[in-house]
Image (cartoon, rainbow over all chains, first blue to last red; front, top):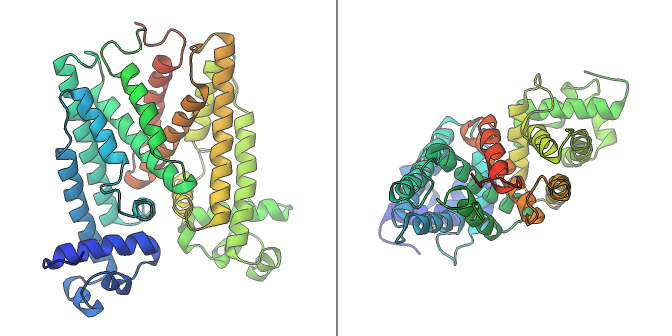
Amino acid sequence: MSTDDPVSDITAGTYRALCKHGYADVTMEDIAAETDKSKSALHYHYDSKHDLLVSFFDGLLESFTDRLDAVEGETAHDRLLDLIDTVLMPPDDDTPDKGFQTAVLEIKAQGPYDDAFRRHLQEHDRTLREYVETHLADGVDSGEFRSDLDVEASADFLVTVFNGAQTRSVAVGRPVEETRETLAAHIDSMIVADGGAE
Amino acid sequence: MSTDDPVSDITAGTYRALCKHGYADVTMEDIAAETDKSKSALHYHYDSKHDLLVSFFDGLLESFTDRLDAVEGETAHDRLLDLIDTVLMPPDDDTPDKGFQTAVLEIKAQGPYDDAFRRHLQEHDRTLREYVETHLADGVDSGEFRSDLDVEASADFLVTVFNGAQTRSVAVGRPVEETRETLAAHIDSMIVADGGAE
């Protein structure tokens, strides 16, 4: 997966190294081993593992935003369900995503200690909330969703559910797929205009 | 907070040391410093930091179960809301619970790597689900909750929401209190017998 672009080569290598070794244990050497760079070439680009990871997460937020932009569907309801799949499912079924989700959870646990990571996590959290809000507001406008829906609180709740599904997947091995089903029912009952009336 | 009981002295000391230093960085020395034991006395009781922490988490599950047993309320609905407070709020407002929640999240991220921790996390997850299921089933029996409620799926969803609230509190500093409000609305609409009908 090495390419001519040094940044995307380092990004892909960092991803693979995090999947294999986790955040706490991964070294610049592990990352170099997953790219066509030497360890000293990596140090030419980045002062430290921390610098490299912060830059890696910048790129990650960008590609996450691209994936959220690619969400599609005829109705706001369809787009909301497609967003849920985008967030809960790995970007590519071939990738060893479980290892990566574990590294992400390790980094979430660094939030209180590490300013750069926390700012990143907050930006990621805010971006996701805003995309969810957009689909919810679209659905209220089109009459698909309840006119009295608290768009902000509902979006915030959905982001909490995403976080919970990801945490339990890592911590206790519970498949995220199971959350999708319950989320769809939650949306039908709490959010869809005539939901819960039966 | 040192007591005559060596186990509860070590438990309280481990709690304080985890709050201060986090899971990855805490040492036997840090824990000893929070008890009236020497580091070598700790090593007499426990072979390693890992052993000590596994035993600490045994005790933690026990006290968590005690707190779930203490949940009260006249109706199943009241008891469910009291359980939510019990789970999302710290056991004691004076404790520096944020640090402890962070250590717990670090340990959740160890789930895939550490068999003893994962078994613990799974036991904790299962216990919580079972208590939630009991209150939901009580409410179905009493007619408070929908007769067609999928008790197992609803309990599982609530546990996912708890995990999400705890993760976001640590990662991005979002107060767990905000989840309680939305959860109460979710319960009124999805779970309570005539919910969502208005």
